[in-house]
Length: 81
Image (cartoon, rainbow, N blue to C red; front, side, top):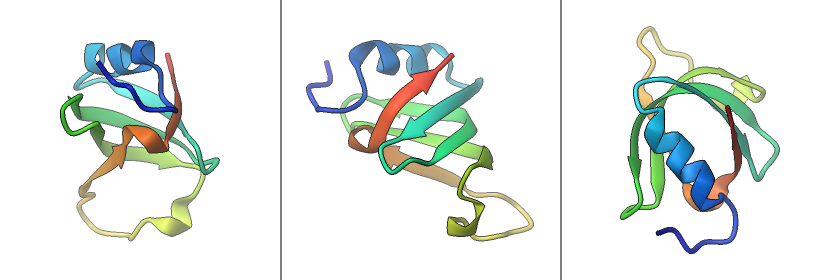
């Protein structure tokens, strides 16, 4: 069980239940992104996702094929259904 200070255990359970599905994540820095959850690791305390859209497009490189990204649980404010 995650014991950090930001994302809640229910948010983590929501992420785990939505692997290979679309999720909307609010980050602690204010970014909001929509992505496909690829992997959720309580051991590593992170989410790996394929980015679909973001409120901060300028911080991501443009590429012909989008890479997967990862975010630490500590950087997630909430997960929206």
